[in-house]
Image (cartoon, rainbow, N blue to C red):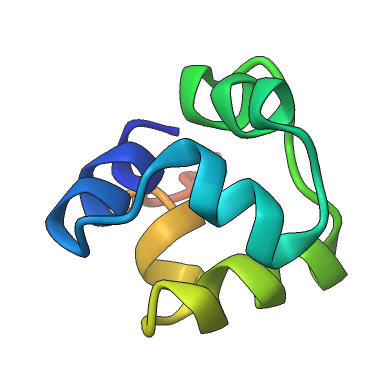
Length: 70
């Protein structure tokens, strides 16, 4: 989740601080930022709240693709 790291850094919040505020380990935050793990909806809400933004801005792709059916 490169956007998670980008937004976290813009807010000047360390991985340690974010982890503490949302109740997970620093390692788990690193996994989220690397895209190795995906958060539960509850955790996604907590992260968005701490970063003062929406879940969509953090976890959804910036570009949508059209679904084409033949």
